[in-house]
Amino acid sequence: MLGSLRDNDTVPFGSAFPSPELFPLARLATSMTRGLRQLSSHAVISDITTGHPDLCRQIAQRYMVNGMQLPTEELVITNGAMEALNLGLQCVTQPGDLVAIEAPAFYAKLQVLERLKLRAVEIPVHPRDGIDLEVLENRLETLPIKACWFMSHLQNPLGASLSDARKAQLYALLCRHQLPMLEDDVYAELYFDQRAEVSPPQPVKALDVEGLVMHCGSFSKCLAPGYRVGWISAGRHTREISRLKLMTTISPSLPAQVALADYLQHGGYDRHLRKLRLALETQQTAMLAAIDRYFPADTRVTHPHGGYFLWCELPEHIDSLALFQQALAHGISLAPGPIFSATQGFKHCIRLSYGHPWDAASERAMQTLGELLKAA
Image 1 (cartoon, rainbow, N blue to C red):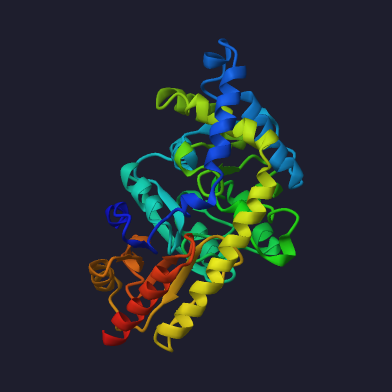
Image 2: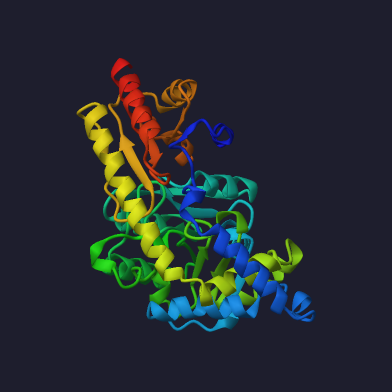
């Protein structure tokens, strides 16, 4: 599926990233030049394991704006959020352990578990309400689960978000079982719910007084996809994660860290985010309208309050893997449901991305998908 996205002529409904056109890449390049010019020779090697201090301060300030007081000493800068999540998981599990994940779940999560020889315990996710806490509680009572890996906000692929009350219930479960949780929050800044105009909804990490939650973020989805800079606020596990990072990649790119630190301080990050959210909301509206026009009447689709994915539940006879191949033959990529499941479920579901500017090619592609569905 990822290979299909290398062709620029393919309509990228299967993409995991928004369009590069939506990011201030030229302004970031200016920030990199200015930041490197001001960088001392000592700084090149002084903070390679935890991250550049200016960037750590800027990230800590973003937390502070959202009402969370996190010391910079708790932050570890990583090569994107995926490394942060990998390190967190390695810190609290051993090969063969059980890890609770969502169903459906982002496919890279399944690949990480496979690589680390961990076993998935799938917890259903409601398209609006998020993870099923009753099922999770039952699994925690009956299975020796060692860690959880959840997205509390704008979950990929469903776009679901936990309410504040449900986040509190989830954290109470973690405390009762003394269970570490990886909170994957890479879409935190991409909300466009009118009720959350000032700042993003608070993560489960905001409730964490025991250091159980490892909160992972990234600039890849909201600012600089090619820079591969993420972070983990690791609570009680900070020291061990720093040690694991030293044993693996040592440090993310220093020029990328310097560029992001300068941009966050001087580049108008919040102004960029407002434009990005407006663009994504406009593109979501266009895709939803196209689904209504072209897809079978019994199609069910999510309406997330942010992010850039829609999850479509198609008529039950549809094979989304076959649809993927048919669509690709017409120059259209999509993400078939089975790749989001450890048990290859969701066979009649697809994930569509509205992360690219809507144009005539997008409209034609949706019409073609509708024709393929009706002919199936």
